[in-house]
Length: 341
Ligand SMILES: *Cc1c(COP(=O)(O)O)cnc(C)c1O
Image (cartoon, rainbow, N blue to C red; front, side, top):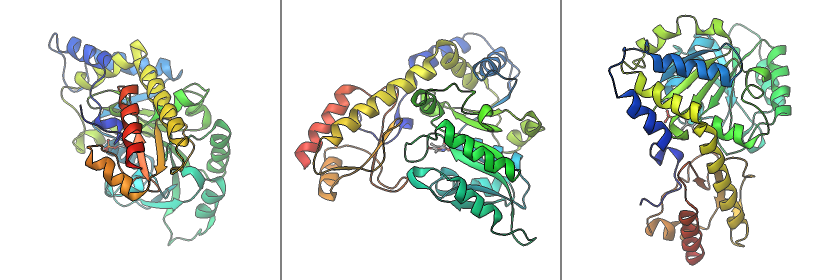
């Protein structure tokens, strides 16, 4: 067993997704997404979100974010996001590349969340022809530091977006964990809160590969298939992405997995809070815990084979749980940590 809390993308494929992948493998299927698995998965998304949205599948989150942002703006526009946003810090300039130059404008806010004031400042700071015109607002749910935008916060953000005619993009790399963490429906925290496009990660939820891009504003999806194809993101054997997605949606595993991961993070957070030498950096609201651990103890944990990241978000040790995190692994970690201290 690999001893890790590095990321939910270290985990394997969950049983439900694997089962559907095997089923999709039972017979030949039509290529490039014209198959029944893809059709059914798209219909299931429309049921889940209670609206007639357009659905596309790509291989990873960087492509999902970059291509969807490119469809929401022109090269001379700008995208407002938090300074810790994955699109700013971890996509190697892909959003700018895919949009032929749209610029990211980074804002601030406590707990990894953009504030209406910060958005307002960036958008109104200039209005002349020399500044890239703000067109899109991108928010991450759950945030890069494992917190959640509440419904009230989303509504305040929507008000600023409406005022300045900005489209809203949501990076939902951990969207399932957000639904599990908030007492709200998928519809409530997306299109009913003004979100135009959602990138919904399957990979971090339990798939081998595959992110869904959900266009609530269908007009933005015009010719989007061509954009995916041009970017090398159209899977010819699409059913092996959409089939497992159908497995997550039909069995409810998407939410079960997220609830388990969130419960594990809460457990871990609780144990860590009880250790005097440590300092929890953010409230644990989904499936990530950020904690300050003295450097020698970090090294001792690494020497014992534990893997975790220390460069994400605002730094500190980031511990991420997933669908297959076990209580045994968490107890082992806490045990080793206490020894290291
Ligand atoms: C993991 C992640 C992504 C997607 O990353 P890929 O490695 O490109 O799949 C996007 N946004 C956030 C916040 C993430 O954590």
